[in-house]
Figure 1 (cartoon, rainbow, N blue to C red):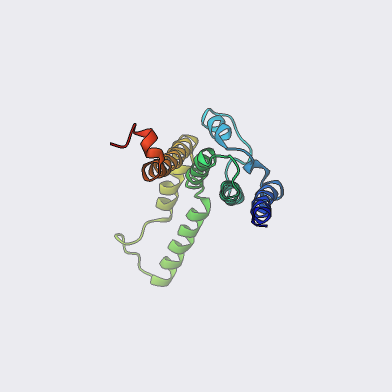
Figure 2 (figure 1 turned 60 degrees about the vertical axis):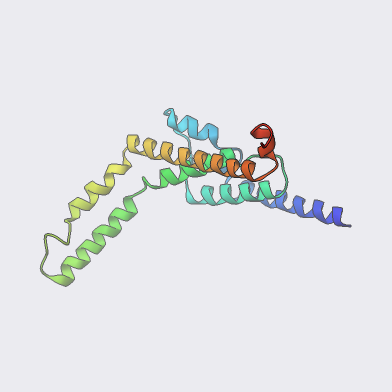
Length: 173
């Protein structure tokens, strides 16, 4: 009856999460914390960040936790934050877009206003600052810290609004 439906539904979520990881992004398997720590310690980790990895890690975490598996979302959320931090350093396409917009504006306006338009070199120097290795590590660290912080605030809100607060705070006086 209902127990079979519950087991079947949870099994479906587990299989879907597993298939997403196996087929689309094998690097999404696991928590991601070892990869983040290794990258921040100077080891080049292949396929550490990417859009496909981000989507599969996010969906796999949601499906795994929703299926009732005894897995914590803490590690994957830290990895997701690190992926977002790493994506902020991928500015080459953005630089090219700014340069195209700048050159289009110069050709259509005909007269260049010094206050409202930056030169093409200014776009490259401004955005390429974030592409060096030190800034990339800083942004990955910030992203990982943001992921960790959001997970802890989420867990704190669960403990404070549930019966666990009585145990956590020693008596609920």
